[in-house]
Length: 176
Image (tube, rainbow, N blue to C red; front, side, top):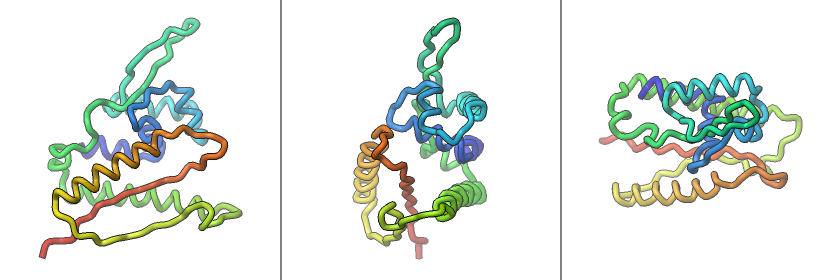
């Protein structure tokens, strides 16, 4: 799992995986339309790495004028299931989390380095909340959040829609 998670945490591969969330099936051109900052050769290279690692898969192949168009989707299996997570050492978890946080810092820095920003209008924000929930209440909350996230993830880009990164991190308090 560690190598699969580390593979996904690469910025380009993370973007590819995010474009396929929600049972999407897309060809290279459709993925490229969503990832306008990724050169096509780079996109192909990272798609191949994700296919080799079985993170994504080719679900269809269409014959188009002498070439084969591949349609990609996320692999059926859950990424980071319970068994896989239990096989990762504490040091590996910390490395993965630090990589993830570094990625987020880079996104935030890129936003702040723009010539003109409007934190309020752009909806910039970060929050932390300490909540007290039973395991069952937490699972219900996580499921509701997942349903809500899926609903907005499935919205296609349009001229009026801004791309926004929404991140959730759940960290339980240490046991006393």
